[in-house]
Image (cartoon, rainbow, N blue to C red):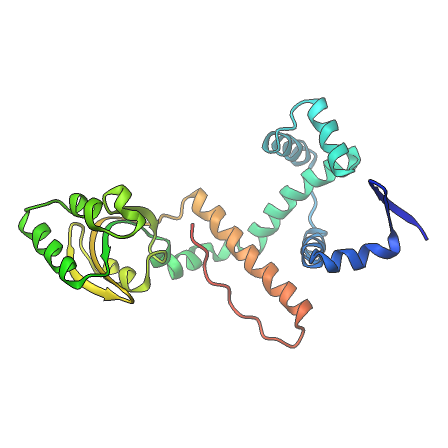
Length: 251
């Protein structure tokens, strides 16, 4: 047997490593990294890009001193060459994302913009229909503010913020609430609506339209990349299955 690792009093051999990875559900993570390596293999970096990649990697992972890098190498069992290759890898992944999906970002953004818009809204929820109706009338008549009613009567965690929630993506709230918000004007107050066990009063405070700025571009590229990785791994695990689109993640 070939010794691979020594962990305390236990010796792990090369013959055991595959079984251990399978037992600890680590194989999908390995497949992920191998898929990425295969995808970025054709990409090359200029000498300037290599220098920038190292600098960015060391800054990102707080490895700006030799002592910090040596501790990293010891902790991960890596060589200095492997560390540098890892830094190059991160930049190659970013280049792969841009080369693969950069031309799709505008159309992708427009397709999912309604989910990417952010919303700030106020919410009161109670299991008592009578209480909900009374609170609605009080707020509508100006007898109490929404925040006062929410703090005193709302039965969810929003009571701690005077009913105020957000900013969150439009697809984060309950679908029934999201539907109300999507057709509301700022300041619009909705009468009590039953959603499951709750009666809710909803008020739209503000809509923050999504913009295709640099942070948004990075977010969309990351989502497209993760969708692609998921589909590739799914094909390895279930080679006969059809790819299923992955829902857009919340920002």
